[in-house]
Image 1 (spheres, rainbow, N blue to C red):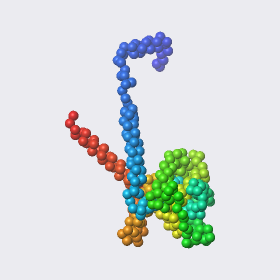
Image 2 (image 1 turned 180 degrees about the horizontal axis):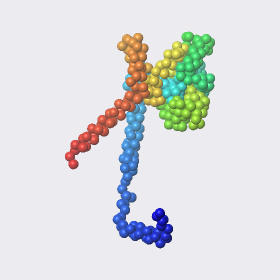
Image 3 (image 1 turned 90 degrees about the horizontal axis):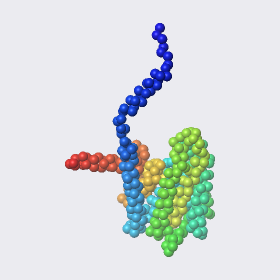
Image 4 (image 1 turned 60 degrees about the vertical axis):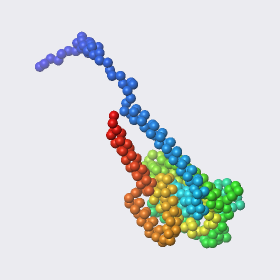
Length: 377
């Protein structure tokens, strides 16, 4: 049997001395990498100018678009100025529906009721100052949104849509049967809102008034999407169970989404009444709610720009069919377009526009790369 060699401190010291000697003899200098940028540093340094350039390009594009939109009423006749005002009014209401449906995932068919509530408040409070009217519309719309939201907290999908539709039908019933207050089926005439030396029913001044609120609504919705509350809405939409597990209050989030949606629609209705000058129950029945929903789906749920595209579609396309004398074709062709978008572009028109823009940028970058490679050294 082989005997194990006992541990010797002298042998350990000699081996350690040999290792230290070998380390001392290895005099090759270590490579100096302090001044050599790594790949990550290079990537970040190259990305910073592109990010800043993209930000400046977005700001410049926004300024150009705003200048163009602001000059439109001076270049178009009154009919098209009024039509564009209608597009912006519907865009405000559609942005509100996108908050509760596109972001929070709550299928609501009560948006036209909130829209009508703001319109009738404008008709019934004409003796009040404009600022007080606006605050009253906002407060009443908030309460109405909470009234619709609280009984439907445990519902989702089609059941939620049916219950919100019931609220809409109750609103129309009240308009029809409270004739002494609402004018019944005959509607109400709404005096113009004074704007300095002019009024809201002047095409140009009404356009500017609506444009101001449309820009404010757009910026507000964009800011909401960037906040923690906006991320909570997306979490509730994706999975209520997962959202609850991470501490998100479902009741508070859903009620807040309905209240915000109602505020946007109420303000849009208030503007509609003062710009058009007349309100009647058929304007706020089921069909406008369906059109708002179509606008959100068609433009792209969860995208503010998609709400603008959808609103432009539901206003301008029927106008185009009416001009050529084929108004009856719009429901057929409009339904066909909606089906095609649902099949080919589940993310809506904005998703298609984003993909197209990305493809164009990729092709342009590839062409530039090819041209630089062919250039002689």
